[in-house]
Image (cartoon, rainbow, N blue to C red; front, side):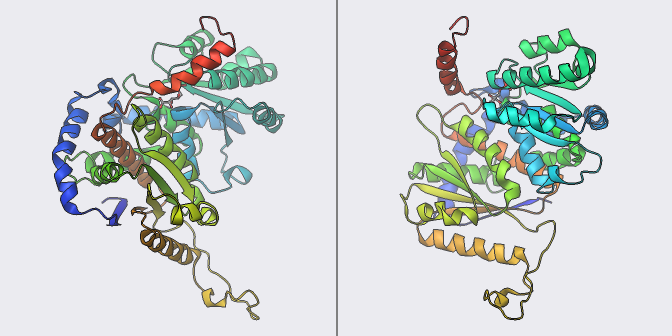
Length: 433
Ligand code: PA5
């Protein structure tokens, strides 16, 4: 059974146009399956769910448990694909204010290395003062400046506190099997290490130890997450848009893009999707935006953003389409109470659940945006379970890879991100620049 259901009824796209795209989808499917398209060295993500072994999961869970035994605070250091999957997973699966109350013997989890903000890191030092800390530094290349700086800062802190030997046991490295400065450091210092497979790029790495270790530390059942992803692999590896919703979504995105709908807005009605949307933007943005082409991926969080970006979406430039990402049922149900004097005029909603009201807000929004000439579709996930999350990760990876190929770009490289780095290194007088 699929954990995701899709509704394409507000798209202004007829079935015939999707049918006409089927031959191109099959060509791109072949490129993905046979590895004869651009970026074919980075297709390992396709088979990760099926390929992951029980013993690998047990190893990750074992290290996660030892980290839980050692620390009150666990800091994940990484940027881009090296942290967003884990953060998306924690945000989606955990209680909203997890770090602020009981976590069943598990550490609070924070992220670093995704910015170069002095205040962010200084505030983090204040937060960890006097508490037991462990670090997971994640970098495929092992040379990324932002994460290297954060690691250096935090390493110094914990080495001061625990000494070199003590600190060594509190650091876990996730990086390339044999290359990069981080790999070298791990070898020299004897840190525990997990490997990111050569054929898996950063933004497609959530189902490797990059995403799995931090989620296991948080208590996520990573076996169930992989089960869901495996289901995704089964469901979304079929070449036909009639049988494969990920390709159907990719096809629709491609058709809308060719009608000058150049921005896709991922619209959610749950804060639990906040970082999933960030993960999706990174996946889609880095994979598709190149060669002067690509859908610009944006996100909004309703109903909050209906009071800001909602105006733009309703009446701004008509170059957008909207993908609603919804949850069928919240983890917990709250009902609106009855007030005797009804001073706030809300008694008409008394006894109704927040899910009920939120769903009406979604229906009202979809209708308004349809009337406002914004093509929109919805993707509804059954619940906030690891299985559903695993399937969602795989769904979007397949869809984005397919859209990239349909649009004639290599969805697995990111040459554009080197430009700022070159300038920054030159300005910093980095040797060799
Ligand atoms: O998707 C990607 O490849 C990037 O977003 C990388 O994940 C990001 O730049 C971090 O790279 P690294 O893991 O090498 O530090």
